Image: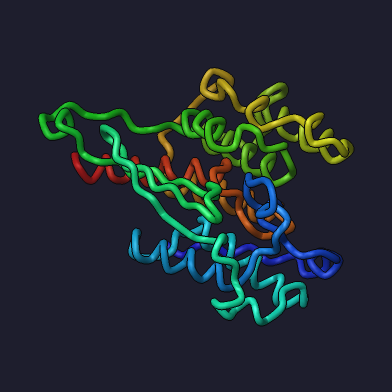
Length: 265
């Protein structure tokens, strides 16, 4: 199925007078957070993802890094010498590690020893082989999983749009529910835009914790749901880079797991 690619807001991108740094798109800290995303490091992550997954992940870490790096080069914020591997700090090592737990395989992506992305792959367990069916993941459950990966992220307009799309897909209605998670997320995004101190901003975890109970209806996450949520998040993100571990990433991961479960039946 072809995916409609959202148009990039060129006018707004041209107004940006500073580079996209790792701290702008990932939950990282220290020196790495202030470094501009560089083309060479983005290339290393692309290579790592292709080695592990066979291809780069749509809307994943490598895609985010490439979009940010391309912007930095076009805007002249990154010296072209950064493409030379000898000019890149050895500390900016890129790695993808794998951890297996019952029924799950977790891939963790890191730059400079800081986590920038996670992917969860469903694996057949002994119970599945014996015929005990594992329950598919709903949209509400996927939203709750986002609390673990990005719960400390301040809510912005792209998060609010993604949550609204997720609520609409779960309930089958485009009408925002008064007092629901979409309405709460929108209010949080408006509030955060006026607040300067990060510690005073409303976080994702404040909005979507207990999402399953807050939704009047829920459904199993599908590829179509993931595409709708991902497009909503992209259209409202000035960086045009989805947040790794965010709402769209969690819905996408749930949809992939559900597809694998259906394949095993």
